[in-house]
Length: 480
Image (tube, rainbow, N blue to C red; front, side):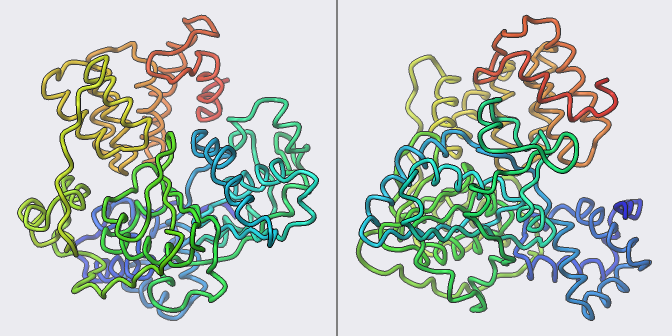
């Protein structure tokens, strides 16, 4: 059955039932991401209301009270995310070259590994780890007990993960030889099925990360050598993030690793985890000795604050409590221990832009953001700085700021191919498909004027031909 169209119009913010619905959804899923995104939430809730024939938020709230199945359907609607194989090449280089070899050596006597991919979506990350494990262990694999589990709140994406059949877009970082090595033709034209020797290593289960905090999580979720929880925590309130990371750390073996998304590290994690410097990777380890202390219950964890924090709230963990309170007001998070204000970023060889790039490449997006804002204060008409401002805003889940930054870069340089491309991706991800496709078409048109092997400025080695190949599938019939 085709997906129902959302109920048209802006969110009914004056309706108490809509406010109650949002509050219950945020409390149940922890997705504080929607606290200040009423129209986006209404669009996704509206799809379910049309499917079920419910005319108003009050009726849908009543339906949720009667149906756990409808809760599952709504959770699936709001958590669909895009992912692909070997996403974030530097993190997989760290897994292949450092993290998994270290764990294999440390566990060689028991020949047992336990790995958890939390928020696994349709499974490419989990299956990518399986591929790396099989290649590292080789002929030794049958002698090892591998527990590789992917979990997600969305049961629909878990069904995709179990089938392990994907379109070309999910394989876009793989060359022809890798594609042939890991996949065989799928059941439909243009699809690819993961080969059984890789598919058989992983299993997939439904899991709400909030269960780690309310005591309902399975006792089997423990003793892990590695937990990957990347680009999941950006949806949660900062107080919940602190508690979740501590709970994840408690489920690691001593010496076990935790990988987070580039935008998710927090200096407060140093209280119970050791940060490990690996290129382009937000990596932590549980100390070899000692337990992870429990987090005291927060004084307040409102699912939806009375006042929605402004952009500066995302940086509150980097400030002392009194400063955070002044900056964010009543909606600021309550920090449990004073944190030193980070030192200013030293100038890097090559100027401010080089400093922004270097910090971002090292995975320190907070410092990169500060460096970018400082550089823009000195050079507001530099389109490259505006472009990096957009990339960093997207990494912080601030699509409106990202759009403004990319448009600013294009105002300054109409031929900036990568700014057109990332503006298009930002708009498509926000549901503004027509506008996004126009931006992507502009990127495609400009790339077509360049030699196929020409490296695009600020494209990290991406060539004109590679960008064209990535953009065309997003344009659908328009690219024909």
